[in-house]
Length: 135
Image (cartoon, rainbow, N blue to C red):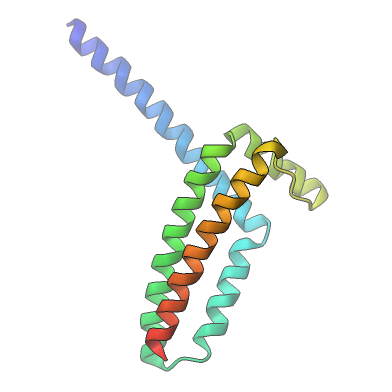
């Protein structure tokens, strides 16, 4: 009986953590949307697609979408490593009120920026490879 209770308690804590993680990821996606980042990526994709054949468009689009999904997942993990969910909530609120991005704890900013730049470069390389395959 004690084991059943312990399993229940542990699963409850696990589900709470998962729900918080999911909510954090949802806010990161929202942050990318309201700041215009997602729209910029879609504009790049659209621009590249205009220069490809129909078959090339299909293959490039699939590879681009895979690369972008990977980028979003890795960037969410990176944001979670450096910032709390509360940081993101306050940043979203601040952006909605002022149209300025202001992530807290600037000391972390340089270290985070270097890691984020590396992630951006990985994404760019994946997109370039996909494009070159279709040329």
